Length: 90
Image 1 (spheres, rainbow, N blue to C red):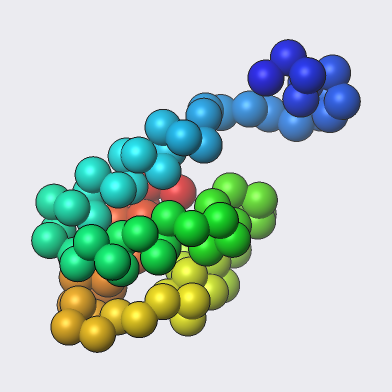
Image 2 (image 1 turned 180 degrees about the vertical axis):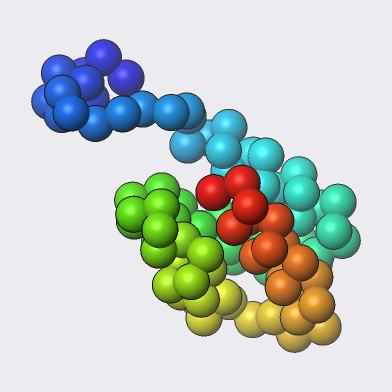
């Protein structure tokens, strides 16, 4: 993280991407979302994209983008619940 702060002195680091994704994986498992769907959302360029957009865009554009990248078959209600939880935690 020191290298990041040296290159980008104005960036505020608030945590580790690995632990952030791990916490969301635990929540998805708790919601009993199918494992293949969990694996798909954790792929690079899906949920981690939410870490680089402005916080004001997460609840609307960010969650919509993530949901568009995956197959919600059989779990639409669970994914909706997950989106609500994510928007609250941001």
